[in-house]
Image (cartoon, rainbow, N blue to C red; front, side):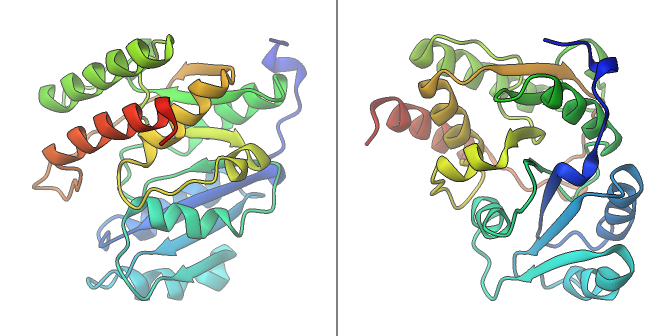
Length: 239
């Protein structure tokens, strides 16, 4: 990989996909944080039929922050929201940004710089490398991610430290070529399975992470683990 210092950072080449469902407490500061960190990026916000006021907040910020807004009439899940946003992505690179403020958009600067240094690669922000230790993270969630990582390694022959990170930065053309079908949180397993099956180079870099609990609004549940296990298996054998 070329030295990141030799690459001129250009966030005008980035589309940021922001799926939102009932994040009234975090959506405004998150959107402002993204725009501050990535002022030249295309910000695509997909509201997945929120009913807590998130939608109205997004609409009130649309002009000020230069947002492209999609208002889904039905709650389809994170995967559905990402796919709606991906159809509008026009820049060279695309990254997914959750609306819950667990991830710091400033880290995307580092991920995009690394991606620009190695065209054709995919860059993941890992919560479990050196910078990413977080005492607030649920041990059960950490265990689930580790088990999924090993399951994927058994199936595809590549062990990733954090395959279920939100921060997946891909060339937009590649992301669109994957022909994603997921509706919910199994989206990560589908993306990983398709990239690993193609043997696309994946670079992992450490990021900061501030975990929240179910009481704080975290939406992923235990059954999403088993759905991901199945999706990895299905993608491996392409059925």
